Length: 167
Image (cartoon, rainbow, N blue to C red):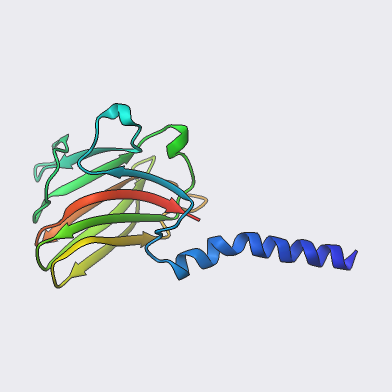
């Protein structure tokens, strides 16, 4: 009996190891098995993307996202959509994009009741292409993210992909 319980414990530990070790070994979540993503420029709604994109203007109004780089004060909102391919409990937000120079932005999430989730300020000091930033611990038993917000504070950032991911 003791060997069976010990074996079950070891198997349970091995199965859960990906959820614990995965983000530590791969903080950009490049090989996460569960993902809900949208690529930019946003394709037509019939392609099954997991987010609807909108730009929030300085006066608080919103309009459909038309693509391109975000500058200081511009906010990109990504509202997580439904559908079986997009469903899940997610632990990380990843944002991939380009920048022609130094800058600063904020990544943030919110839940279904519009309560703020986690936020992180990101900074970069040189141009880059295809760099991925991650915001960890966005989901819990009390909070499943419903959307993401990218706010550029300095410089310029052109997003290529936004994903919710988990192991």
